[in-house]
Image 1 (spheres, helix red, strand yellow):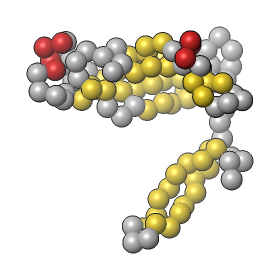
Image 2 (cartoon, helix red, strand yellow; image 1 turned 120 degrees about the horizontal axis):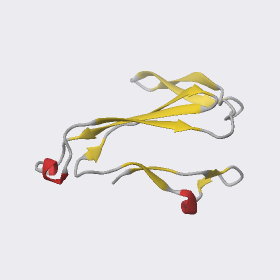
Image 3 (cartoon, one colour; image 1 turned 60 degrees about the horizontal axis):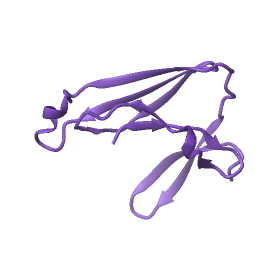
Image 4 (cartoon, rainbow, N blue to C red; image 1 turned 90 degrees about the vertical axis):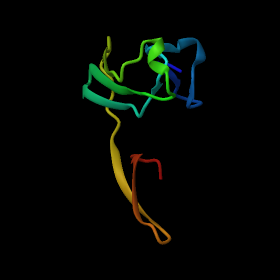
Length: 104
């Protein structure tokens, strides 16, 4: 499956299906963990790599590529402030999960 990008309805916090676009194509291999970096208020980068699985996926064109998609916004985007919180998990140490400020 390709990596998609779409707008989110700010009131319902759900994807607006009609705005979905393919950001990175799928060429036989699975796309692994992706990352998003706000370079500035007008530029965002999305990185993702092909995971060479299942066997034989290279026959469709995949070659273990790493992608960087550069998004340039017409309007400046508002930064999302994040804070790290620690929660005790029984017998497993601590887990740090960034959460948007004001989310509780």
